Structure formats: C-alpha cells, structure tokens
Length: 320
Image (cartoon, rainbow, N blue to C red; front, side):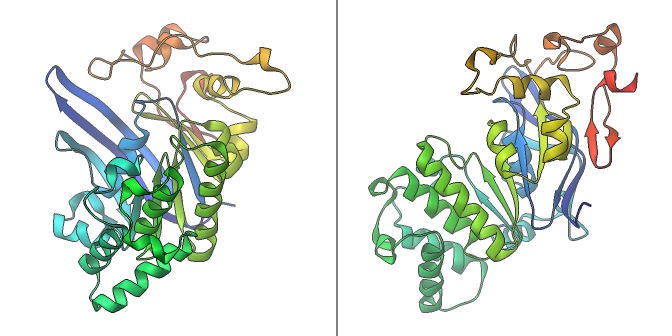
C-alpha cells in the first residue's frame, strides 16, 4: 500500500526560451513523492529529469519559466509563492544536491563559509551555534571538522559530493532532491554516497527524489520509479511494477540497454535520438523510435492511465 504523499505536481509545464525558439522542457507532468521513501527519476539526457527537480524548488535558469500547472507541498502551491517565501522553503523544507559540486560550490568560499551562510540565512542562531551545526552536518556525512577550513579544489570528488549533501541536509529538510549525485565518481565512491543518502533518509525520515540516467541504480535503490522521455512522464509506479512489468516501450528498451555481465550479447541500444524539444514530433514523442508504433501514435498524444494499482503509463498501446 502506498504511503502519504509528501509533494505532487499537477499538469506541470516548463519552457526554456533560447535564440532559436522555445524549448518545451516539461509538458503536463503529474508526479508524486511519498513520505520517507526514495523515488528514482530516470531517462536519457535532456528528457526533463533535472528540470523537474529544479522546477520543484524553483531554481530554474534565467531563461526558464514554469508556464502551467501546480506543485503542491503541505497544501500550498509552490508555483504561487513569492521569492522571499521560496527562500524560506529552500533548505529548511526542501534541499537540493546539485549535479556537479565542483561548479555548484563557490571556489572562493571555504566549506565553513558555505555551511555558515546556509545556516545563518535561514535560521536565527548565533555564529557559535551555527558553527556547531556545521560540524555536526560534516560529521553526519562522514567528514572531519578539519575540512571546514578547506576550499572545494582541495577536496576529492567524493568529499565535495559529501559537502554538497551536508549543505542540503544541514537544516534537516523534509525532502531531498539529489540530481545525479554520483556523476563522475568511481563505483566505490558512488556506493558510499548512495549509502550515505539512504542512511540520512532513515535518520531524518527524508523523502528523497533521486535523479539518475541509470535505471539499474534506481531499480536497486528506489521504492518508486518515474520514467521521463522528452519532457513527459511516461511511466510511474512502485519499483517492482516498473522493473518487473514495464508497460511503456521506452521503459522496456531502457531495461534492455542495461549490461548483464552474464550475458553481455543481450545488451540492446535504443535506436535513434531523443527529439528536438523546440520542435517535438506530433502525437507520442517516442513514436519515431518506438518498435510498436501505430498510425494513431503519430496523431494523438497519449495520456497517463492506471494499468495496475499505483502503476501509471502514457502509451496508446495500453488502451487496446
């Protein structure tokens, strides 16, 4: 049985305005996060995973805009909040671990400066109390207080990622959005970072949204999985539903593209390329690459339907 919903989106739309047109980055995305669970959001690069995470916490780039829909947290529509109200929400209620801490951390600020700024901007405590919180945050991610004096370039990739997680969790938020937190890390450090996120999830009763291109990683770690393609959420459900009984052809192909060390010859690539979201194809955006394409797929855009309890898919095949 599914738990209590921590946050959900309704018909969420996001656009990026670039020189050659308007990028339809998200369209009618209906997505949910359940309390104290880990939801993996998977798909190829450019499918809208990071945009969804950034839209939830409203840190889109200057050329990005939420153009439609709602984001509901604690009964409040985040889209309608003022920037000042959002500043209070970020960090305290919803934390974000950026994709690349080497570029998201300020190279001119020490680890201590980063943590103290985050704490003092959000809560009224003395500098000594903030410093104690900073030390505890570092300890919670397995780092020594001695690293408070260090600058980002003096840290290893794994240490920078842990600092980024400490920054996102120092105020003990209810939701953590982790955007590709293991990018550019070796497999041993990747495991340690993911284990750390799961430990914090248990200790703080965190609700985690893990954005990753690796569906095998999501299958191993997540309670729920949302599959994104070309700005659409095409499948969503419990991890066992999505992995054991994938309903969307894109999800099926993603799973077939995962290497199997016992049968490497069975690995399949997905033919073609994701569409240009300035001019996406009509109908189902996956139809140019879909092995099961029907004539109606070119004309009609599929809507999410429930194919099992809590298992949703946007595919015209499932109507038949």
